[in-house]
Image (cartoon, rainbow, N blue to C red):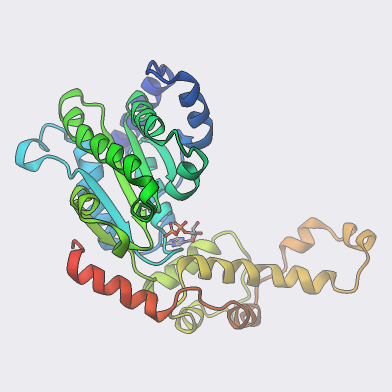
Length: 321
Ligand code: ADP
């Protein structure tokens, strides 16, 4: 979509949203949820997400285009009911969901199954209904449901899961008729725990792997965009040394390396002396290759090879491409 056209669309959506009022049957619950999980502008751009080109392509087709061309995505071309992103933790699933929502001017509802439903134990069916009512009131909305596998873990979540299945089925019908698009994007680090009923509703299942070499390079560059680097810093070498690290691990390495110059500068100084160091002087300290090598040494990858095998096995059985 052309940039100007996209901006016009996003402004039109903002205008509509500023007039939105929830008039469902659970106003108090809705008010609390609005505070806890609703984000009208997640502010993550497509380019903030390194790599993951396959996932971006699938999300374009499953979420972005149906929103822009609802007439085309009818009948056999109807949008996929639900989309699942699975893969090790810290690989950019949440970031990508926010980027899609930002790109489409969608309201972002960040629903963490394990924390949210745990806190509202006993009210979870009411809560689920309210979540979807709220999503419709703020449409176009992305319902991002994280740790969705946790719904299949406990017997106690059974009724909640049934209600969620009902809501997902209803979503499909209301999307095609009202034009108020609500998209369900779920994420899990344990796809093997999903039962058949949920798996069937999550029709597209996208694997979000650990970053490959090129993605690691891009991710380091994104993280260091506004940071002063010493001329000898070799990002390719850092990318080579970090095979098996997640995007989150790599971000931690960049953060740690970028703080090292400050650590050296203040070593042995009193707080009073530190206060007297000019801010501009501190900002000018470049990050060196040594800072990176030290950080790589210190920070270990969080994902095990067993984890990767588990995901790849599930991908070969149930994944989409
Ligand atoms: P997940 O939802 O897969 O557990 P997140 O999306 O929460 O992971 O990622 C955690 C952090 O790791 C992000 O906020 C970002 O700093 C970094 N990150 C992970 N993957 C990427 C990526 N592909 N591009 C840019 N940053 C990433």
